[in-house]
Image (cartoon, rainbow, N blue to C red; front, side, top):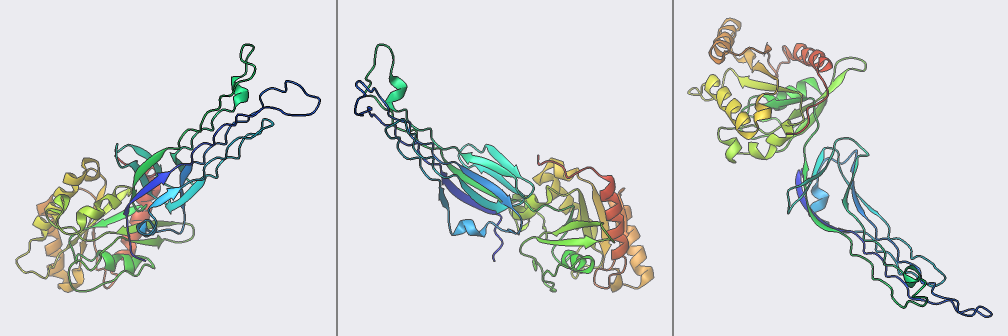
Length: 343
């Protein structure tokens, strides 16, 4: 199924049923009086996070969702039946916004989370409601109130502990293949990854974390260049960012330090909070150079970047150093608090 992380949906709650204007007509009961019941409540529309759904693609097919309306009241003080509520399944990690006001209605972070997006209308009063000492035979009944109507914007953000970022062909997909059972496409051309991939990294019994691989970033991503701007939001729920740098880029004129700085600049431009997120530097593809030359190249990159955080030297292709990286990430995640809230 095609990966879709944004969708527009229209929801319509049910209308309330009409109240009834009725009088009791029964043998041997003179002046029975009014007995019209109220209309039933309209059904409401809810969104519910459901495990196993990984895309909003279904909303490209069905865009409108309507709950049932209440039925009219009837005589003998009978209230009309309420309309059935409608529960719409969405992926875990979906943010729900009102598309017209941009108000955030809910953030569904775990399976079973539910948010009310359109409230059903109240049923109209029957004429029983209007009787009084001065109005003993009211013939007035009220129509039901209309249900709420909304245009929603749904944004799905993957929920992961660790997010991979870097230039296209930095080795992100190769790394996630090396440390997890995920099998994203790997090839020797840019933008092989077209949508986020998730992998569960297991570090022994009962110890695991989720790693997210997003499409590679390029300079200008925060302004819409390449694929990055569309998927940068998927890093906002992560706790640690892993910045992969190719120490031996295919373009001999490319400067890994300049490229790394451009990625950090795009990150800060997209979100100040994301720019402050804990970030680890991982120097990849050390297998492409002789050991002494690879060590010298890595030292030069670290010196020029003046990087102060954790630094790892790995080869994702040969899996050299990947297990040590995964174990260090697991230990760090066990120290950290739960994932940060969205800004």
